[in-house]
Image 1 (cartoon, rainbow, N blue to C red):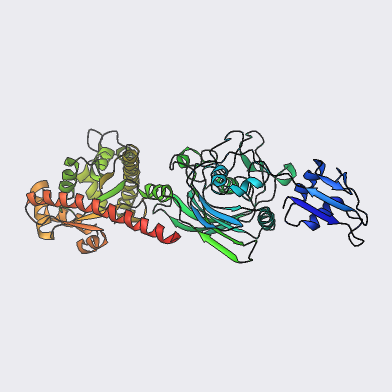
Image 2 (image 1 turned 135 degrees about the vertical axis):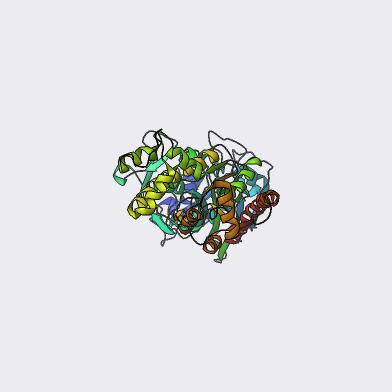
Length: 524
């Protein structure tokens, strides 16, 4: 509508001029009409009228000639993924990395300019962001609603202001937030970093903000979670600031996340997933959903990809050390609990020093190391000493094994192996995180006892005593994730070690595929 004509009657006399024009042209905003009057485009009884607040009188003839809108924007070609389009509006899936509308730091190559290239009618709307009724950050992907006409823009803007538009996001965050939660902290401009927002009391300029979430998924080690986030207000950077404030920043967020979370993804892992609103023309309830771009599931799967921890265990004489040695030959980093104990018992070792204080040197050899034969006899005779030794030495060994795994993961090893004879007896199956995969080495008891007595020179009594301190063979093997049979000749163990490595690779592939299916089911 470029020309508006109206006759002031007794019924509408006394109104402001801009209000009378607004009643005659409800499709136009009052601000646009005021701007046209101030610019001299309105005549009252043939004379120019430049005051929007002028009172109207009966019998006046008002003519407003609206100039054709001249957009300062340049239309551009560019890919647009449209989920819906009609005469009133467009729903598109904005890619990450694309700015919504021009600004001083990005005057061109924006979504608005692509839309203008596809929908030239947007040039009739004022401003540098015609049709934009809400925004997404440059590095946030997902659903964006755009009005194509001024009436639609006014109606949708009002619906957003009344919080009648439902927006839900997918957010990949650090840590394990509660299954459901919300944050109502007020938000405002950061007091020192002007490009940032911050939690700020309302007394210092913060504005009310309300974010709620539901946890959909998390990595097995609970290091990363996927949230469905609904915002009830539309403050700048609201989701990013609220979640960072709660200690669960978005992965890849260069502005609000600390280095560990920032480095886990190529951009902030936020995607506008669902959108629901009432169509401004038809009144129909409109609902849209779109899955995230591939970088989000890839970041989630990468967070699942921790170094695999492997525990080799079994009863005395089963061949734990032999299997561990063959895996070491394959290039895998390994550590032995028995070797760690030997270091602790050596002269100057922590356990040797502690036992000297505990037993007064009775169990030490002349060189200051622990005499294992004497210690074993003392432990068999004194259950309290046995308990103290096990608690102290096992704690030191557990810490050493955890440090070994952390060092190997930091070095980039895909798999690291710990030989731990008393893994289950110590209760360690629920201690380490991420949880190791346990591999039991099977060998029948008669053959195991013969191996021990032949290779170590132990008496049958000593071998039986150590066997009695461990879980029964059947119980220990039943608790293991995998079993390796070592009841055959030594050369058969070489093939078993290679088969174990292949099985571990298969398990890793299957686990990743299962996680991908789980993620895809969430947004299907």
